[in-house]
Image (cartoon, rainbow, N blue to C red; front, side):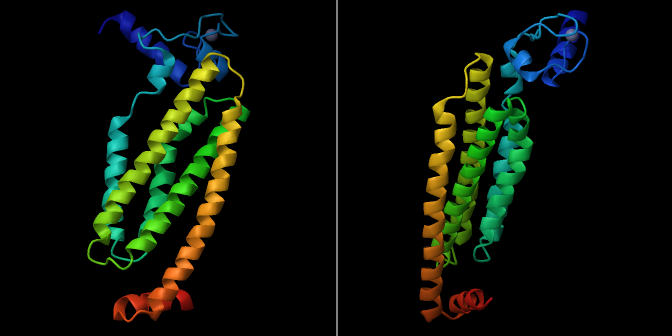
Amino acid sequence: MTDASLAARHHDRLLRAGRCGQCAEPAPRPDLLRGRPCGRCGAALQARGGADLLVQLETARWFWRVVGYGMVAAASFVAGMAPLAQVVVQALGIAVLHVLLLRRGLAWLPRMRRMMARFSLKLLGSALTVCALLVNILVIPLLGVSGLVLAGVGLLFTAIYVEAGLLLLRRRHRWEQQGLPLKRREWVLPAGLLGATLVGALGGIGAVAGSLHLLSAADIPRVSDVARWLLEG
Ligand SMILES: [Zn+2]
């Protein structure tokens, strides 16, 4: 590797860490996204390593995505042995992958846009967890195959969360780079999702109560014991 390309890599690494590539002083992220001159030394805050700074920040991280989805699927399969345990795996998987893959991208957005994006992601995560709860309830009677179904659910719901989250951040980074103000859909989306989550939660509570009641009345020894235990606990 030549000195010039090493210098370009070092320069771009500083930009990705939120600093000027020349004087290494912290630079405002909107300035970095838009490639403005540094406020200290005047150097252009633009990537030199060939790829645009946004492309560098978006480096797909395929490895962590594939490992993450695989681990959630495996844990969901194991959790499928106990009723409703997969919901916990699902919520944990979403929370951990959020920190590993999405949190850094959020930090690159200005306050209002970041709050709306974070709120949208939280609601999406909650909506997916509620859906996972509904599926978990539906598979309680299928003791033999529930692990397989839940492994698929864990993989699918986690992938939906991370891929939709990355897409959401990618678009907002572009809007920020182009200097576009907060769009109506950036706050309409969280409001819509909040409504959907409330409806889903009410449906979930109804489904839990209904199926536990049916199960405790059913004459399947193991399943009705579990349902009775859940109702009494
Ligand atoms: Zn500088």
